[in-house]
Length: 118
Image (tube, rainbow, N blue to C red; front, side, top):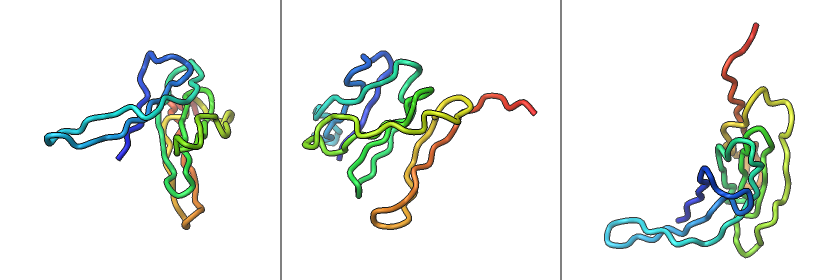
């Protein structure tokens, strides 16, 4: 089992850390596997989703974009793509994956809007 962590106040480079979780004496212990990801520095990485079938990790970098990285550390730490850079009222807040088949589905994003003017 693994844990992805993004901490506030981290450097722009290597902003996300991947830990391997190991059970030890009835507790979980984390072992750092890798540091990767480039944060925009605008607000924060609000949400992270992992696509196990296709082997990708997606970050919602608030007020910037959704960023895609390889999930497997052996495939490197280079960003694969950025998208969803426009048409959000405020922050790319949440991210999830809705599967429709073995290798198909949708990436669902939520927009954090504090106030809507009518």
